[in-house]
Length: 175
Image (cartoon, rainbow, N blue to C red):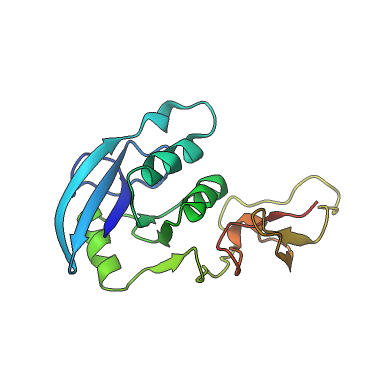
């Protein structure tokens, strides 16, 4: 199995990057029978992209033939590219090394999204503040941009925090 992890450095002991699309490197790890048997570092050319860094990074990773990505954070466009490429996304591992993240994944500590599984919605974090729209925020539903599945919008929780239960894509605000 091939696993990819965004990293701040070129080796397996480097810390995981807190971002996906603008991560300096991606570490591709080869795992066989639950053991790490090799790895390689790929420099991320999308780090300097003006726009679309997440999509470019996702395409780079998909071209490596990986099956799983472990990341603490990923945008909706990049996650859609990865899910459509059949790559499972695993959230977790902030503040640990690439090696530690792989070990935690192999021991079952992280939850996958994509395919038939989904990530439960999270609560808004610090920095989320109300808009200036005088109370009207548009339609009160979140829509999957891939399959069209709809769920009611929860006030104070961005639609992008929800994952479609049918296809695993990040939800967007309905039109």
